[in-house]
Length: 294
Image (cartoon, rainbow, N blue to C red):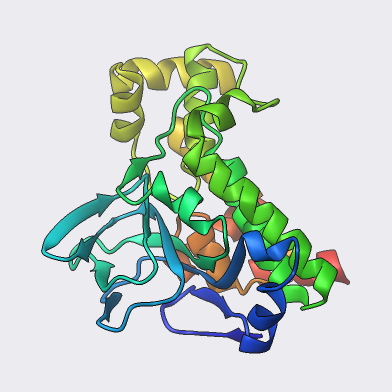
């Protein structure tokens, strides 16, 4: 498989034609299959204008920043927490905002069921954090699909990845049912529990205390007092602990580069990420990975 590099922290896979030719007649994969998949963090100057229509559908899930897409003469602006699918066989244009470029997960896909999945997401649907939201679960599905495809191209591996993709698309197209079906949705309805859930759902973002207060509909000083009383940490310090815990998980369980992991934790500056990691863990990210794998 071909892995592409472009934007700092980018991860992308283009499946070879021999694999897509293998998937199209397969009884399971012919229903829904991926041809390209990737993640672009803070993709400044990202722009695609396709005058020759693609055979595949294009799914873009924006988790940070802003962007746009254009179909015909209609342009639609996109912001964090929105997802859309561009139909196959149509010319289209999309790209990142010049001042606040988007961070996106994207997938090109086809199959006999692709039109049915795409029909409910051709215009932006909002995937917002809430008490029952499962944004981190959805991102986990994407990461599992990516890691399965990155690790090899055996027929059973491909079938498993495409089965996961049904689940990923279903989590967007049937968002209410996906949220209701969660077995580990937050059951702590206290203000502090709600804050922790909101932070978890926005682990890739650069939230401020004002953002948290606005989400909770309470004053920042009052929330800070409650949170410090119950956890012993300020909200932002706790958020940093969560980010570094996520970084440790990625260092332990993936081969992602450190400059890719820092974007996955919402800390795009690799030097600041390394300093924060070292301050919290007592050793650098590279040393942590070497120690855990040694």
